[in-house]
Image (cartoon, one colour):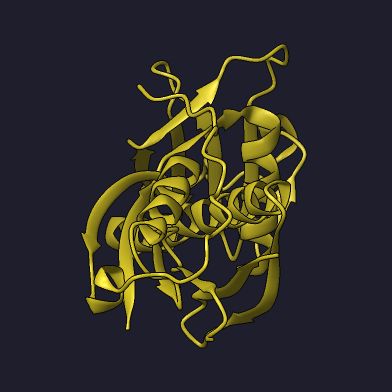
Amino acid sequence: MSSVVVITPLVIAGWPVISAAVTAAVASMGFNVVQSAKVATPVIDRERIRPPAKVDIELDDSEILAGATSDQEIVVEKDGIRATFSRDERGALKLCMEGESYTKQQLRQIGEELVGRGTQQFVYHRVVTELKQRGMSIVQETVGADRTVKLRVRNV
Amino acid sequence: MSQEELEIEIDPSGKVTMRTKGIKGPVCMQYADLLAQIVGREEARERTHEYYETNVHEHVRPTVDVKQHRR
């Protein structure tokens, strides 16, 4: 038997830490990182009448701490979808999903998965770093079929 | 004596579930406090029968000094 605690993550860090987590997470979903929005392949075909679907997703439990860099945006693409991570006016993490051949519902679903993966990567890095700093040891690490990360930790 | 361990699961949305194994008494709650400070906002906590057992050995307490910026 055991004691059990369930914790909802708060994503609070500077842009470099958050962008590193996002970059690692989106790569695992097959997205390619584009250097900046200016050089991204246009998703919108101006010849067409119908504009691409667009969905904004905000991560309420997040705060991107103000930093020296003004370039706080990551653009990633895959299969005609463009996802832009940025810091909104409140300082929270925001994701803008755009895709010509997708419904808003599809874009929201994919976007929420992207945000979830980024959050998972952020939490994993933070937990492992903080526990190791306290002299604890990760004795086993596995990833389940549902992509849940399982860690066994001992206080050595 | 059973090995003292923490089992930590991070689901695909980033939500964390931690179970203490072989840790008796209030010390296991200190580990829960530590992880909550590292990760974010505690949603639920359950004490099982092991919590109420007495420990023969003195445990090394986890250091809880994480600086967390909360809005």
